[in-house]
Length: 375
Image 1 (cartoon, rainbow, N blue to C red):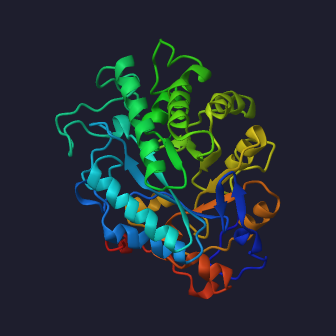
Image 2 (image 1 turned 135 degrees about the horizontal axis):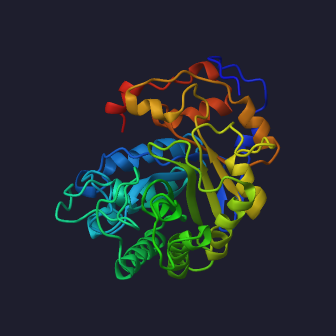
């Protein structure tokens, strides 16, 4: 895809603003707000500022908001005391207020349920006494640093995800997303580099999906048959951008089948650049392949509307604007069903409204320095 600084759009943007019904989830547009960690919830409690932050995006035409990662009730789920919790009375009251604000603005919202696994440094707040956990005690660099999770510990984490799912439904969310991407705990079970187990949770690709599938099944049991479950997945891992869970479409089908059978409704397919083909011999991107294999709706994501992928943001790098013509072509071809927007929506709450109204010259380039003050 040729990236340019122009904001002139040649194609109609109508495909982004068609409504979509996915079971009980009725969306007014195809635009999704991607989950983006901000660490703006002191002691894990989202306040009125968090509710206002999400409401502004819903007011401006975002059909579905996926919250920043929210951590389940496990002491090693996060190493950041300002990442929002998804447990405890005060945190859940805060999230109920977020839901009310988004719904009042006409939007839909799901929480992303998260456990960071071995990417957390042992000794980190808010639970410095807790040891970080992973399937095999191996970090993303392939180094053995502690003991593998026991089956008892695995079961407790599965139940923590299920409880969070039940709480999401109880306080009014429109579904849930399970974070199974980017080298965090669920993904650490999926990736053979970090999963060296020899029991039923390790070995073959299908065996490595067992932990994820059991979480999905437990959440499905907790929320019932109709409550939407989104599964976020990626081939790449943090600091291992060329990693592949599945190197071929055939292996991808092996990987996806247990997750599909467990009860996933929507697959959120994370890539760094949405326009890149996933496998040789086909122009389909990751979301396109997942939709082709599973028949389920998919969300694409990855540098939509920007000239640089998101990794530069962590190095303080800004990004110019790029046109979205290729995205629109792929949408019109039904390659995927929804498109997640990250940094463009972070910097500009009115991004969707401006695109719908053709106000491309009013779009705001991504300024990494602005991340220090955005809320």
